[in-house]
Image (cartoon, rainbow, N blue to C red; front, top):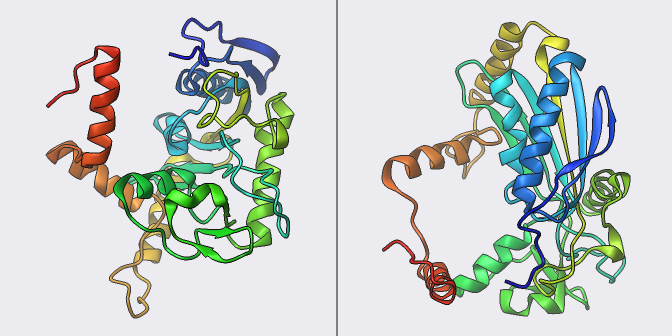
Length: 291
């Protein structure tokens, strides 16, 4: 509505080498830009073994794992990193929010087990979880956010008064910084003070940066043997005795895989707060929301 996203983009290369490229998304939806970038990375990795494709002038692209998983069907490992669309994280020891949640996702193919899919923000909680808690009228656990005096912040409706905490303290801050430079600065995309908060400004182009790497397993190992080895690693994790309070040992992506199968069979539950927001938006735009 506000014109912040180009609905007729010209997504194109601005730099290209045999095993790399930089894509200009022309302010398109991030989903379109990264789908394009992923396809390019996969095609290049077929011949070069490994391919790295960066993107600039993109927008929020949704779940990181979506793009990391795209190479799986081609017996490839996928890696995705993005600069978040709003800064909610200060440098370690500071108070100015100069960094975002800057997520990473890695997907590794398997033979029989569900693929290993690591999808994580560099903060303890992604900001989307904060917004979900606010929408549902829930409180946040201590450890997600602190206020500017360093005290725990658990009311998501007061999120603007504080900032997210990085995973692992200074280590998480370091990851957020490095990921931002790789997915943002290296591509000529926004980073640091240049990041546009798309929650507050729906007009200014965000120049969001992302990257995807496709790694052909065949370039490094026998594909079947590698997949069996990954399965064996998963089985060894599952075989570990558990600590009190744990019913099982799981690997990254296992829970989301099970939930997806359940949703495919039973449908997707929608919280009343979200359904109300969708209905209101649909009414304004003249789009019927399925009942």
